[in-house]
Picture (cartoon, rainbow, N blue to C red):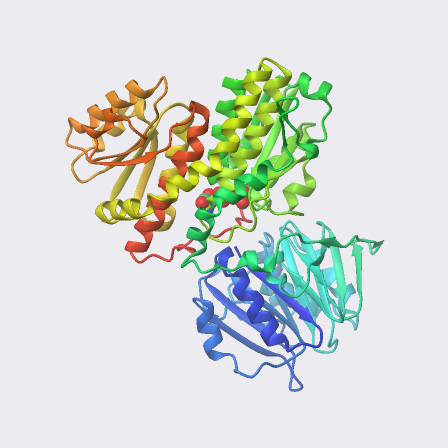
Length: 607
Ligand code: M6R
């Protein structure tokens, strides 16, 4: 979704802002703009489309020392230059960038018009600039404070005023905003990626906080003007991990990184002495863990699929009733909070509004919610009652890949802990650890099939529709494969339980609609083979992702991708990789924007 960068300091601000916006591109956007101070007043430059359009019209010589920049993902008002941020007041002296949605903007707009303000865009954001103008009596911080008290909705906001050079005011409610502390310079940004090449010292603003920033100082307060002392955190990620490192796309890099990110997610968390796991951040005693009678996982998109896999594993391995739910659905169905139910909110970004608000609703009703997040300091990570960082490193491509396997890794370790507290033997615990530790090497074997997967992608990518079919713990992996393909290649794809197709989807089968089957060599193997035959006999083309050496698939499938043999519960890790690569190569062949697919955003901070 929208990205924000603000800068005060000695560097040429146009350069800092453009660099920051480049780093924010991954969030998804459809227009961009900057406002930079200059002796002649603010220079505002905006453009629709990709950042290269903006770069083409920004003077080549860096200028300014203070400025704000924004990438906009349209919500209110179309993708036009006038709707792009920054927005200004009537005088042109106040400029703002904003993430979030102002729900009462229509009413405010009318009010402002009645007071003689002239608004130039269709956005909800512009009303904020005019409200600040209305409230301003020489003190910018006070004007912003007064303004935000009139707003209903969400905002991450950065404001500058021509009469206050070297000053920015930021405010946060529901949309992330962090401050970067440099040496004689300060930053405000929607996420760390925008500022990491300048500073690793950050302050995470909370909802209801406002900050006034100059190159040398900052002051944080709440909306009642009480000063709040904030701790400076250090970002652990390296600036280089935001680069493509020689890969053509972030997505491909992130697919290949999985053999390392899974290792990072397990590091120090597997205990061979007691054949169990350790997840310090859970903040739960053994007694509390033993009291857990049910686990409910809430999440969206790919994280939801990781939750489905985890729920399956928790039930089958730890004997705990568990299910995963789409966060946005749970939030609005008045969920019943049972005593001794433990909740998890899984979110790569830690900012997904559907998941965050569902979590808050659960907490409001007294539930304990643990967060499984990648982004350190993200809202879900901070507001959850405990949790685990998955340590997959920054995930830049919109299509989530390495976060998926890292989320599963964290939940697998949690399952091991719970199983070992209940019914799992020491030997079985050790075997579980062995199998988990063997995953990264097995992934490397699968990567060797990339050329074959690329050829298969080229063969099938001109189809209009694709089915992904799996059973048991691999059914959610089939759903994930379909999501991956549709979001980046724009081919219609659905994931089903292979057994379920005879109840409807089989009507779609014809020679033009390929079906991809996940064929494991476990107790469900023969059932899946039967499901494949049902498709084959109706003229459907079949791709099988199968355990190596499975002779049964060759007689039926048109194309086979082999993965190393493993135990039933490890297959989701292995089966995901060919599906990610298939989606990647299909999108590439079709000339899609792999890392920033149309209409999508990396961090979905609206409902
Ligand atoms: O940051 P989150 O994990 O909460 O994001 C949830 C979904 O928006 C996300 O997984 C989305 O489905 C991805 N684009 C899938 O690749």
